[in-house]
Image (cartoon, rainbow, N blue to C red):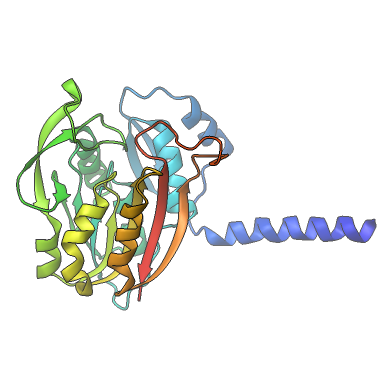
Length: 273
C-alpha cells in the first residue's frame, strides 16, 4: 500500500512539475482568478501581468484567453530569425499580440480586428505597452475587398453575419487575405475568425507556400463535417497537421447531439512543415 501511495504521489508531483515547466510566463494567481470570475463586464478595467498593462472589459474572456496564450502557449512557434513576420487574424483586444511580442520582441505583426470595441482595446493595449512593429487594421479578413455585415458585440464571438442582427449589425471593411499572402512571406499566420475560416482558407490555398507555420481555430456545426474535411484537404498537401480540442462542448454527443448554439465544434489546428 505504501509503495502504491508513493507511486501515486510521484505521479501527481510529476504532472504538476510538467505543467509548471510548460509555462514560461506568470500564471494567474488564485486571487486574480477569483476576481476575474466575478468582475462586471461593462467598464474598461486594467490589470498588470508579465510586466504588461492589459485593458479589458470582459473578465471571463481575459481569464480564458490569458490561460490559453500565456500559460498553455498555444501560439508558441519557432522562427529561424529574430524578427519574424506575423499575421494575426482576429486579434480581439490584443492578448495574442502581447504574447507574440513577448515571444519575439522585434517581430513585425499585422493585426486584424473588425469589432470596434475590441479594436479600441487592441490599440490601447499596443500603445500602453509601447509596442513597435505592430500595424492594427480595423478590417475583417475575407475573400474580397468590400464591405460586410458584421455581428458586433465587443466579445470574442463577434463575427461576419449571414443575417441582420439588428442593432448589433454593423458594416465593416473587408480585406482579402489571399492578396496579403500572395505579396508576403509569412513566418506565422493565426486565423481565429469565428466561422469564416474555411472560406478564407480556400481562397488562400494557392498562396499557402508563402506561410511557414499556420494556426487555425475551426468553428463548425456537427452536421457540417464537409467543412472540416474541406479545411483539412486544403492544408494537407502543404503541412503536417496536429489537432487539439479548443472547446469540449458536448459531454454525451450520442445523446446531446447539438449545443443549440452558433458552433458545436471548436478545434485548434496546428499546421507546420
